[in-house]
Amino acid sequence: MRYCAPLISNRSNTIMETIRTKLSRKKRKLVITMFFGFLILLAGMIVDIIGIIPIDWIWLLIIGGGLIVVIPNFLLWFKMPCPLCRGNLGGAINTPSWSWKIKWKLGIPSEIKFCQYCGVSLDKEIEH
Ligand SMILES: [Zn+2]
Image 1 (cartoon, protein in one colour):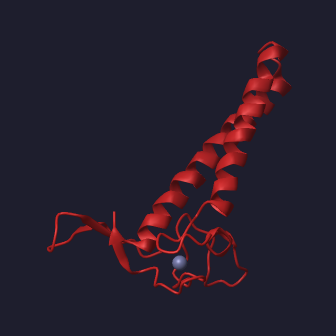
Image 2 (tube, helix red, strand yellow):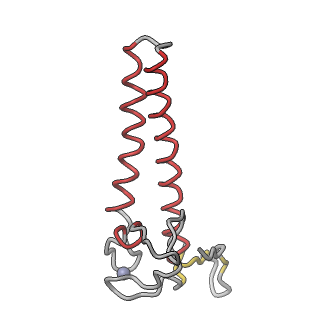
Image 3 (cartoon, helix red, strand yellow):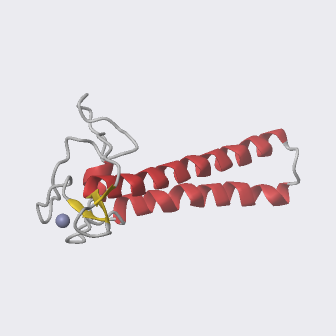
């Protein structure tokens, strides 16, 4: 993934960034949240196996961790709109490929270059 830091436009005081940067940032936050949810879920299961906490509290860890995994996953697939046409890019952005060129990363694979609905380049600059 080619990361482009937000740039300050000369024409106005608005901060510009590419669509790719914007969507990558959102995806990164969601994937990291999912990872922590998975850790909480794992901790719940380990605590359950070891049995150091009374059984009444374990469901909080397991269900809470499970929700922290499921909800960001849902958002990743269904709430990743193109900033211009609002078409959902979740499927394209999150589908891993067996091709060695497209890797499963925190960002958007560089091979995906356009919005599949309106055809705008993902490297087009928009307001932050
Ligand atoms: Zn679009």
